[in-house]
Image 1 (tube, rainbow, N blue to C red):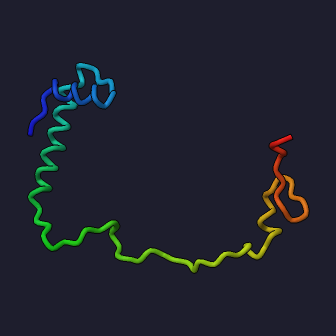
Image 2 (cartoon, one colour):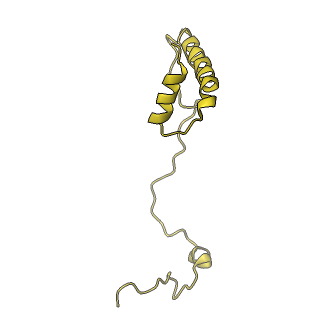
Image 3 (cartoon, rainbow, N blue to C red):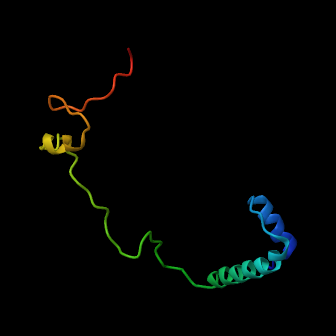
Amino acid sequence: MSLDSKTVANIATLARIRVPEADLPGLAQELNGIMTWIEQLNEVDTKGVQPMSGVLARDMPRRPGVVNDGGDPNRVLANAPEPAHGFFTVPKVVE
């Protein structure tokens, strides 16, 4: 597949990217190089290769589903702007 300047201009219009007329031939050449590289990737035999989401095979880290208060309310409230009686305070919303 080969892209010409007119096709690249059309793609830029669809992508809402302003490309100066003088840059279209160079951009077309770059896109053609990328398309050639993608076509080369199609030649790789991937039969029997498991798809992967990362380079390391590992399980997702899990933690037990335990609900608690964190065990240290003073530390939790340390960054609260105006704590009161062990709780966060918020401005009144409804008068």
